[in-house]
Image 1 (cartoon, rainbow, N blue to C red):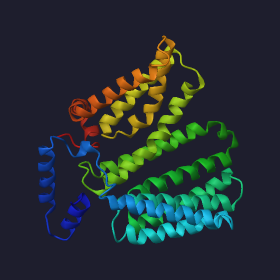
Image 2: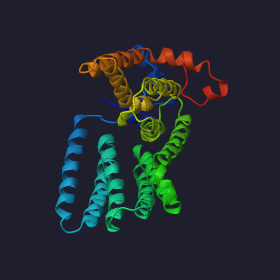
Image 3: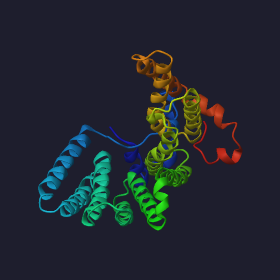
Image 4: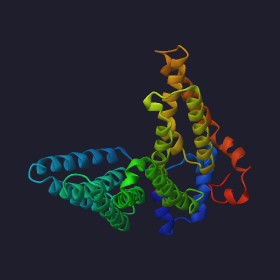
Length: 331
């Protein structure tokens, strides 16, 4: 069994031509009656060995951190970060394993962030600001060495934490608007994601993988402030509010179709489930309401998945030509 990464390496070594590989992909997708760009493909697991190595790495790192935290919590975080980098030298750089690579990147950047916060004592705006900046630098160093796609998202998220902490430190009144600061950060991450996406509209290189993780990072940062402001979890569920939530979800669905990414729909799904459940509860279907909502939403998502390309085609061809040039190709 071979992967897209194997094909790309074969092209680099001159075994196959780039055009031959692309024709092969097109032929394979036509036989599967699907479209490569719309599949939102990304590298995760190539074999069960990836899962085996992930479990072993997690066991080693968690156990090491647990043993050393009694001596010094910051030391434990630093050692876990060093081990994460060392393990990546073999399993990512040499073995090209995607799933362990993702875990080791998160472990490395997260441990660096935690080490700074723990070393400074109680969490504070200044602590998060310093930790965010150092974690962003650490993510950049990891990217230069290993090129794990999720690294750009981790570094961008760390930069958002740094900027938000800096703003709150300079203007304490902004502490009351943290959600909207994160919303602004989410928009920045989204724009970075679109830049990576626009560099690989056919989604056949690693740039698409980078964009995938950036979109996955941006989605909750954008979606949560919007829906939480509507008070759906605070008992504020008037019919008008619920209708607005459904309208927003439809808008997010249209955005997802245009950019050919499903992250926004997934991030907003929990809010829609709660909104519809409470709406049915209001009209006397308490007890079974979640089941009814699950059937409706599940069927709707499966229907959209089955006709994703056709629906997206009809939507994108109605956009201005300048917009169409910046989103994945329509075939």
